[in-house]
Length: 267
Image (cartoon, rainbow, N blue to C red; front, side):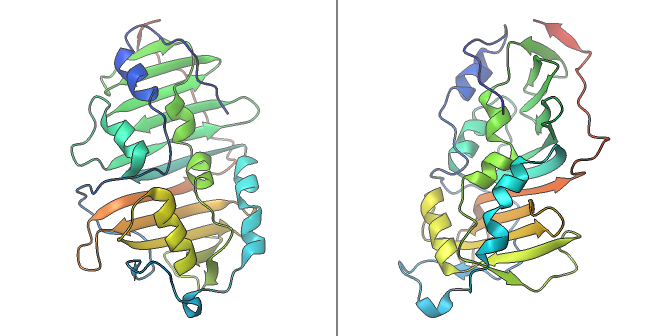
């Protein structure tokens, strides 16, 4: 969506160094201390064995999932909230000023793709970045004032729900399950079987953990409304060692807007 500029605005040396790290929504992760257990609704499945048995595999419902990534990329706008724990992306965020000590990163904001691209992105305690009207503004460390920069950082792309979704393969190993009252309205609920969970463990680099993965697809539009990929330390230790979750809100709403900040201290 956006390109990373080779130049950065004055006063952003710390963020420039952080953003220059090769970012990835997956990547290897070490165990982090997190206050909350898995958010996925399925029961935890142990992945300590190297190969799941064939009988444990769900019946694939691939056709509704094949076009989900394209449907997500085709949206005009949305608000979102996200949690990032573990992996290379978490390691990168942990190097930013004001990063939480427990390395549990709560991300939220607005992405607008049409008619003109704009982003308002907040990484709690670490960064508030606004890209609108061809200008980019960054509040590094959540200091309360913005510095104008030449162009968005790599985090604008790496923290988008589309980037998180595309890091994993949701097209196989998932089965349609019964809807629950806690499911997002107007969605079909898919849950990962062992084959998909083993793949997620491999992609993330987090082995010998207890994984769950759930996906909610809009019945009207076919895009992912919400995902929950969670690895707990063990069946008895519910400490989250890896998590990628997001939920979309106000999809294609006319009220989705991004405005430039007024508290800009420099260019």
